[in-house]
Length: 266
Image (tube, rainbow, N blue to C red; front, side, top):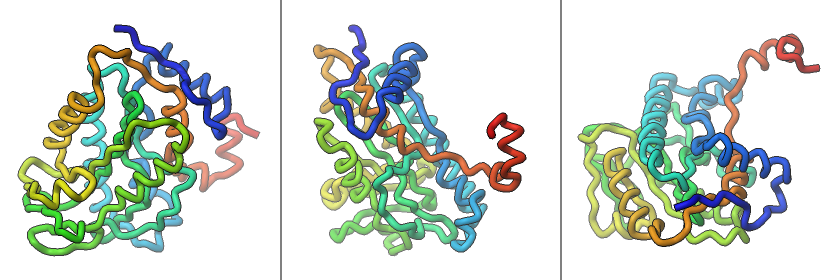
């Protein structure tokens, strides 16, 4: 079955040229992955503006490794699904969430989107969490997450606020749905209790193994229709790409004009 790559609804805030370039990447280059995994976390180590938060390099590097692993798992998952696009590390232009401590001291939740899947008319938001492994997580009736039956900092993921921001950003784009996952980037020894609170919280709390199980279930039961045309909406991809997190360039910051001259910029 053929794959239709085109624009259904032209967004007011995306230039025609950007739509053209995005479509070229999707069509001619067959590109299905964009962004840099863990760009936001890496910036916490490199950008001096985060020094006041006292970033813990050991904790953050573990988080970087976890996000990169999740990204690799997702890229493998979309490999046989030509209508799926994965974008890593997005900070929406309308993101108004303040930085807050994210589970482990020395690491911040900036309100960015770690991983975004665009499949037909659907968005799937995946928030990677660098939380401790070899323990048990469960969700309370108050929608807080317990680790080993104890509360911890950052135990109320802002994934639903993130979902609302995406809904606002894509207003008028005629989406079918926005699905949300919080993925604990730890090994398979991490146990997640799936009781009534887990099902009611509004997002799926998973580890990297169960993430794929529930993505398969979602794709096969709610998104994929083998009898309908497969398509990618260029404008949905282009809108997300406008928020790509750029890696902090410490050399450019340090050497300024000298750096620009070396790069051939005036």
